[in-house]
Length: 574
Image 1 (spheres, rainbow, N blue to C red):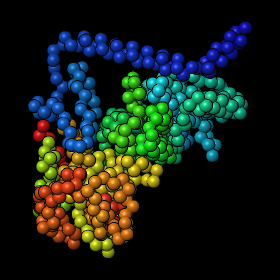
Image 2 (image 1 turned 90 degrees about the vertical axis):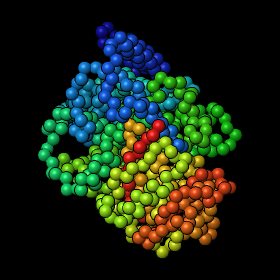
Image 3 (image 1 turned 45 degrees about the vertical axis):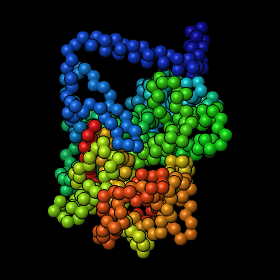
Image 4 (image 1 turned 135 degrees about the horizontal axis):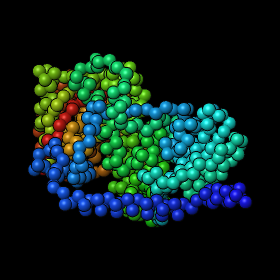
């Protein structure tokens, strides 16, 4: 009788209802939110003691450069009694012990005693997502087949499910002494969920490591490392672009849920699938738009690329405009570059200075340009002269300039093509590991064309502030990097208005120039090391186009050679 009851209870557990689980999870989180609100009410009677703010009192708001949008910093919380925390420079990645290609879910009670069962052609572990914007659902389901470390042949099947961003509920089945029975349990759950609308997220097991954590203890116990052999300014630059705090902050800013799917686990194949879905959305937007179709495609995208929407109604996140589409294209491009950085961070050698190890893996020489070098003065004036009048919310201060020597770039560069110019390119801090290690790249074929005004190519400017806007800095994170490249333009195909198919160049043309109304006049161009430098201040040169400033686009990376990297401080005025 007792055994019958146990079997009945187990059967009941296996038939979990997703909607019921979602409701339970929602109520649990909402209850926590109410508790937090009550706690805030209690603290409102406390003395108004402020946490130390690194910015001056008059600078509370964080305006962003036009056109990119910025996220305002969160309001200050009333500080609790101080608890010692590690300084940023003390933080580092700590790795848990990895038993094979996959890691046992850290919520599982068997995580220290078991490993994920694997075969040469398969790892018995999967993560499923289901984002349904119509029903306001954003769920995940984890399935793992586990084997005991000390008792091979003893198996369990672990399930965990819930709303994205939260630990949710779980169930552990077993032990199974028959591998085939354990596989049957795993496959049954997988089939039930995928038939019900869940999508499997492809995981990069070859690169996977446990999710990084920060620990003071690890800092104290770390093995003694060599002193850095790098110039101090190069070392600081390397530390800046590999900063884990900046990566996590950017992930949150662009809406990606790293808790659900750490970047080390997100595969390039999944990012590619995400781009393909965005291309379908682009086609739907260009045709007779059916809202149900856009809702379904948006749900598919969010199932592949996990987002943490909290408890906002998901119908607000349907990708139903070109602007929203462009945001998601940029997001996937950013994820690709940040994944490169996290892979290098996770593969760091313990006995080598981290900055030196990271620098070597960039395969890109960086040499500090001294301020007494005549070239420094010319480049300093180039920054001063080409700051556009409409970008007046910030000033730019050069902190350092580095000569760039990317491995293999000089050999592939099309030196024989005429019309070389030194032009600007800006990007987020978190993209620079990807740029310096792999060079500037062109969007893949699966990417929609809507995200690129003049087709898929690499974009440059002759006005420094136009490129600076794409650094996405703000008052609290005001350090950015700008690249000055030798760009072989050849014969430019001039355009006054956007053309998403401009990459289909006519015969005899080698690049596209989006002609702006303001630019350095050609009479101001000077020669710097054999390349034209548009040195003068911007002035009205064209009154007919839709662009304020010039854009130069090349569609072959052989036409690009990185020359100088600028570390810049953005001095926000208001």
